[in-house]
Amino acid sequence: MKGTWTFALTVIVGYVGWLVAWYWPTLVSMASFWWNNSTYNHCLAVFPVVGWLIWRDRQALESVTPAPSTSRWPMLAMLAGAALWLGGDLADVAPGRQFGFVTVLIAGIWLIVGDRVARRIAFPLAFLYFAVPVGEVLLPTMIEWTADFTVWALRLSGVPVLREGMTFRIPSGSWSVVEACAGLRYLIASSFVGVLYAYIAYRSRVRRIAFVAASLIVPIVANWLRAYMIVMIGHLSDNKLAVGVDHILYGWLFFGIVMLLLFWTGSLWREDVSPATAEPGSPRTSSVETRADAVSGWTILVGAFLISALPPLAIQLLHRGDRPVIPIERSSPVLGDWHPIDDRLTEWTPRFTVPRTVIASTYARGDARAGLYAAVYYAQQPDSKLVSSMNELVHTTDPWWHVISDRASTVDTPHGPLTVDESVLRIRDSRLLVRRWYWIDGVSTSSHLRAKLLQARARLLGRGDAGAIIVVYVPLPEEALPASAALDDLTRQAAASLPVLLAQRLGSDSP
Image (cartoon, rainbow, N blue to C red):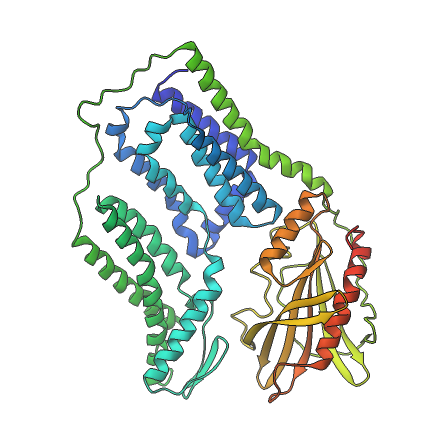
C-alpha cells in the first residue's frame, strides 16, 4: 500500500465519488435546504471552510504519512453511520439520513488516512456536521419560549396582555409569535460562526467551551429581547413603527449589534493561534511497509467501500414492498351511530402535505354534529409525508385561524385507551375542539416518535409505508370548557372502525 498523500487523496476522491453515486438523493435533499432556505445558506460555506482549515495545517500534515487505519474505531463509526442512515430512511427522518451520510463520509476518510492524520484534522472533519440542515425540531419550543418571555416582559412593563396560544392582544393591537420570530436562524448562524471562532481564536479547552456556550445562549436571549422590543416600539408608536418591513429590519439590526458585542468581548481573551506545525524531533513516518501491511490496507479500503454501499442497497430491496400509487376509495363510511351528511361544519381544513387520498365529511348523530378528516399516505415522497413537521392543523402564518391551546387527552375505545393530541382553534369569535392521531401498520398513536418507529418497522418487514392521520373535531361554544361528549363518541367510533376500513382499502394485511 503506497503510504503517500498523492495515493491517499486519490482514494479519498474515489470514495467521495462512490458515496455521491449511492447517496445522491440524500445529497440533493441537503442541497435543496442549503440553496432554498435562508436559515441554512451558511451550509454552502462548510466545505470551503473545511478545506481552508486543513490547508492552514498543511505543514504539520506533511510530517505524517497517511496509511489505512487498522483501528476498530473508524470501522465502528462507519457501521454506526450506515445504521443511522438506514434507520432514518426507514422512518423517513431526513436528519437521520443526513447525519448518517456525513458520519459514513468522515469514517471513510479516517480509514483512508489513518489515526495519526485523523487526529490532526479531527476538528475540520467534525465541522462537516454543520452541513446537515438540522434545527427545525427546535421551532415549537423556541416559539413558545419567545412568546412566554415577551408576554412576561410586557406585563412587567405595565402593558395588559391577553394571551391565547402564540397570539396575544395588547391595547394597541394583536401580535403573533410565528416561525420567523423564533430566532432559529439567529441561533444556527451564531453557533456556526461561534464554533469556528472558538477553534481559531483559543487554545484553552475551557475558553473554547465557554465561547461556544455563549454563542448558543446569547442569540436565544437576544431574540427574546428583540421580540419584546419590537412589540413595545409598535405599542408606543401606535403601530407606526416596527411593523411590516421595519419589523424584520429592526430585528436584524438588533441581532447584528448583539453579535458584534459577543465577538468583541470574546476577542478580549483571544489566544494567538497559528497553524500547527510538526513537533520538534518528530520525523516523517517512514513509508516502508511489508507485503502483509499492503494486503491489510487494501482489505480495509475495499471493506469501507462495500460497507458504505450496503444501506442504500438494502433500501432499494425494501422498496419493493411499497404500495403502488393507485387511487383508493374516498367515500366516507358510517361510524357506529354516526352517519356522513352533505353539510359543511366549518371552512377550516388541516394544513397537511399532499396526501394520496382524503376521507372527509361532516357526521351527524341525532342533533349532534362533528367532523372527520382522514389523510391517507402511501408510496411517500418528500412533498407527501405522513409524519412531518409540515403537517399542521394551522400554519403559524395563517391570518385567520390560530391554535390557542394544545394538550394530550385520553379517550376510552373498544381497543383500550387512546391518547390523542387535542387542540382548541380560534377564528374570530368561533372555536373548534380538534383531536388528532396516527394510524400506522395497524396501530393507533399520537406520538410522533412512535409513529416514526412504526413506519420504520413496517417497511423493514416489507409491509410498505401506508398510514393515515385521523382528525375529528366539533364546534366549541365560546364559554365552554374544551370537552365534548359528542366528540368523545365519534373518537371511539373512528378508532374502532377506521383502521379496519383503511386496511381493506389499502389492501393491507395489518389488523
